[in-house]
Length: 156
Image (cartoon, helix red, strand yellow):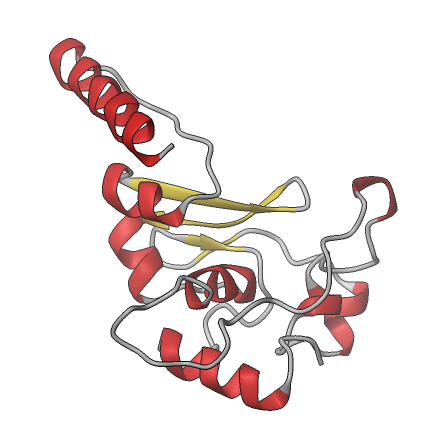
């Protein structure tokens, strides 16, 4: 329930401010992340694939999974017939594919992604586990979503 969620988050924020506490939230709700986090770690298949300040992450995600998550947020200002979704399903943790775990679902995947698991690269105080973190095109949620909807999926 959204009302109860808002009340709980308000209590947590109050405790955090009053007692000077750090707070770790684990959620799939990017709205909560945007409104309550200072720093974000995005996890895919049990591994951190991107870590950045919340503003940096939403403005310019440097991992394809993060881009897909942000592009899938409904936008009431844009009219689309279909909502964006990342094609495919996450792999079973006991049967991860070789290389980057996200490569079967990634529009940017190349041959090396199937064999080399990218390390978590430091790119100026933020981190991304993508071979192409520094060369991904500029991010625009609406254009990514539109391009992927036109192509039919986020998979190669």
